Image (cartoon, rainbow, N blue to C red):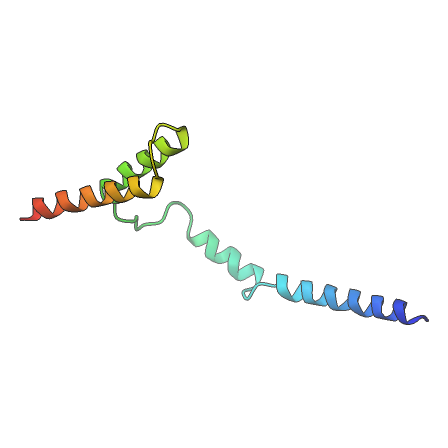
Length: 93
């Protein structure tokens, strides 16, 4: 056999075995299926609600994407974050 053929076969075998090893999960399929069967439905613990200013930041980004925002997106988001921080600080006092 030619050297190119031998090298090609060796590389094909290496790629095949490496692909199988990389695709094999740490847990067996039966373990994964049994875990999934016991955890159906939404999670029992939901995350905490986000602060109110997060909606304002999303609105600012949407305005930027729509072209309604004048200036820099970074400056606008910073302004929203600073104004919410200062209003929450004054509300705490």
